[in-house]
Image 1: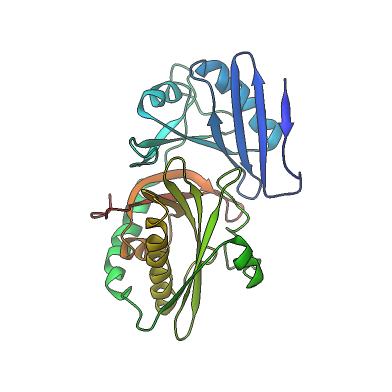
Image 2 (image 1 turned 135 degrees about the vertical axis):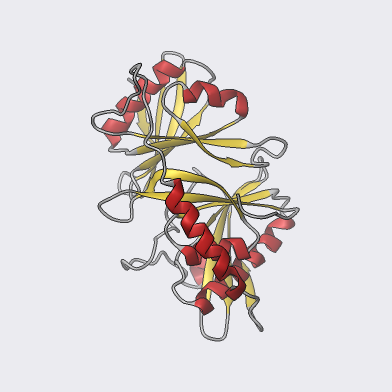
Length: 297
């Protein structure tokens, strides 16, 4: 078995590659969340891929694997236990991406024919959160006098923007989605609080992955965060970014209200995608197109 660790083994994000037996895949491993994003370079061989991915997952301590594929590839992944959990319209510029996810359990969860299964997300609970969020959106209004500042990585470092480390915040900055790529950071400064959002750009595909370093707990924080997300959206327009997506905890009505207020649609619920504590938790998938959005899914 040929494997390569291509980054510092102490880093949060590592790339693990496998290339053998007509298979060529990379896993972008998130050590904190114990997840891995699969990048598949060769079509077909789904049963063999699933076996090798299970071996890699056990070796690396991975609890969940997910991947983005076009429609024609989704059926093959579904046959080996990957569930279609969400959609990102325009992810590949001219075509959509299906988010296919698989949660690895011990013992493995299988159907009556012995085929692997993924425990479904709690969509009923996520829907209740969304209902609460819609009621809160009216409070997430524009902030008067909000100042927006757009920074690159060097400028953000110079200003001392760093991943928050205490238990009440989520350390998103070092949990990169990509193996490489430019990032934009936007600071929204209100009268009493400031909020930061960051986006990793996949410019060949024309999309961006949005990250939030701190979940708002107060209305004024939520308002400034929504304003910062709007500011990021405007900054991405000039970069020819067609869609922006994010994955957030499924149990936060305030955060969901921020995304709804910022023009995003919920397009999926991801099973056990996050590890905020001892137990894994579901996540919501959010998408905004450059041309505008409708109501939430």
